[in-house]
Every structure is written in structure tokens, then in C-alpha cells.
Length: 128
Image (tube, rainbow, N blue to C red; front, side, top):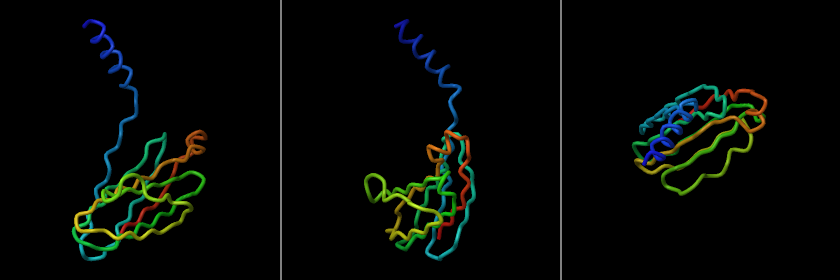
């Protein structure tokens, strides 16, 4: 019992220096088309995430402007298991069909090379 408590305390103290995980920004899309823009910077291997919720069936357009050397992005939806096809080159636009109440999660992050060099990923994300 004493070993278990000591191990727990050690892990709690060691984990205290870890980076805080930022909560995703929630974006709600209505039936009326409206462009919402977000700019951000991802550093130290911490991704910036956006949870996109739809109120009705519609097309959702994601447009990303970023540097190919420093940024990567991935998109997931609750309608499919796993990740969807990767974004290959920026700037890029992807249009997805969404059912009513469907949720997408898009994450933007530093590439491995950018993390090693300490170069931030600066991006502009538009969602319509």
C-alpha cells in the first residue's frame, strides 16, 4: 500500500511540469451560411482544435491557410471511425456533407520538423 501511494505522489509531481492541454474551440453552424474565421499559433507540440457542430443537414466548408513546412492538420467526424484523409498542401479547401447534429473536429499542429526547429505553426482557418 505504501509503495502504491509513493508511486502515485511521484507521478503526480512529475506530471505537474507537463503542458496544459487547451480545450477545443466550439463552433456551431446554423442553416444560414456564415463564414467564421480563426487565426492561431501552435507551438511546443500542442495542437489547436476546433469542434464544429451542425444544427441541420448541410455542406461544411473548411479552408486552411498555413505554411506547408511548419503546419499539419487532421479532420475527424463522429459519423466515421478514425481520421479522414489528410490535408496535403496549404492553402486548401475541403467540403464535407454533414447530417443534422453531426460533429467535426479539426486540429492544427506543428509538423515534426517544425517542433524540432522550434518554429511555430501559424494558420488561418475559415469554416462555413
